[in-house]
Length: 517
Image (tube, rainbow, N blue to C red; front, side, top):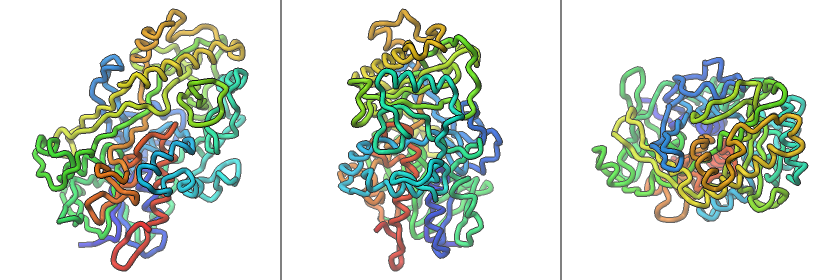
């Protein structure tokens, strides 16, 4: 039976980074297993198709339980079941977050490695930035990060100009020292096509003799002996087999990681008993701390003139703002607006025809609501119970109302008058907090940023420590968004890459084992 030095479970964004970096010495035997196959659907590469490719065979098609604060709706949670993971599904906006977003990570672990300064080399190493090298940007990384200019849709340009006319700061891009302000979205696009992380990190190095990539190979459970993982049971070509390594890394994501651990006997005692899995390691916090960003879809305006089709990916600019003052420029943002060139709405509303309307999305950057994940059965096919507890706290609801107020202020500004014919949603009659809450409950959709179910920390309840090693197990690490203690201000994908790059840089061979320096 072949034995590897490192076995990575999950071929999404973090897994592809790790497979590349850990096999780069030509000697460390690395295996990457992924439940899905290669990203062969041609629509994956078309930036404008991203909202329309969910639910296909490369999507796990998860769904939340009914959410009382979003009109009792169940929310689809697309997650990539494919090499490249959710980077084959997401909206391609590349936003690191505000530097202060990472202070809670450093505080939770006691390690400066997870501060913004600690992660900055990883951010830089991951990218080739279209505007060139700076102290914040790199030009030698695998992933293209394109900052558009002439390609920006004119209605999006008007949106940014409207914000600036009201005192919102103008940013050079989202990935510098400040985040509050307005600028086009940096996008993981090259030559008009999406570049997923498998394209960037994995496929160019598939011929390395010390790298084994096993697509179509779902992980069923970990095999444990005392405080070590001794193997991973996988399904391959319809048969169950065991893969063995010295070190194991889980990069299956916020949903798949805790489910695999629970199927293996690690997790909350009551949850494991309910699904008939013998308890080997009691970890009551596993699956807790589930967080996600919501967006209101949306503040919709019928246009005076045809809205040109997007040359990019429909949602071309995010405007990050302080809830205190539109013109405030310092600190972490509280709310976010996004301009979509099409009439984006939740399933509760009927959208105007494409080309006849545009939408301002609106949301909260640091929600305080905390949810959880639970298993419903012992098998891979048993869908999890996902409860993100959307809008559970009054703080979240208050910030959401503020975000909607800001969207309407921008939407009704003088700069937008060349485009604005009338407000379609929520409509001019929505004025009170109760009316706002009713609309938001029906308009809210996921921003596709689930994190936190295997959070890192120095406390007894943390699932992984400051080196991302699973507490209580000597040779198991977790590297992806599931370890984030809290959300960054915006899309989490850039941070996933930086965490994986940072972890890989410290993962060194020491005698007969690999460990984090």
